[in-house]
Length: 162
Image (cartoon, rainbow, N blue to C red; front, side):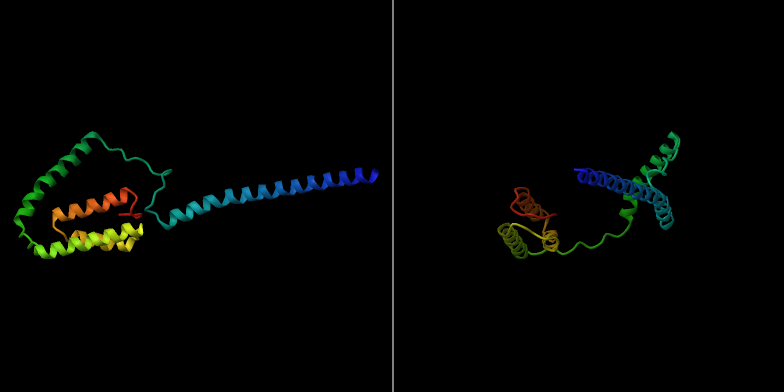
């Protein structure tokens, strides 16, 4: 019985020593992490001086008159822009595809959308290719193809990102 009591006391002492050692290590880690944070933040600021953190950024003080002046300048620039565009020579419009070409392109796009519906997914490269094909269509057909694609994705028939 005395042996069990002495072993229990020794175990308690050892557990207390272990707890103190863990506490000591934890305090050292806290000290190290508290010391490393300012250095890391300072190094980050030095690597990109143009980037301001939200902590150090301040809102510029702009008066109402300054804001009005900026708005006037922007409105004047918008008014002048159409006149400048009218004086520059218009770029030639891209040639319109023939009705047969449009019909073939629409059927190809519909076939692609059906393929993706059957597969249930589309990856980024395939989506980019499909969007490039759709972009070459005239406006009405482009809207219809995008509508079909969007509806299929909304219904969950095609899993992917536009």
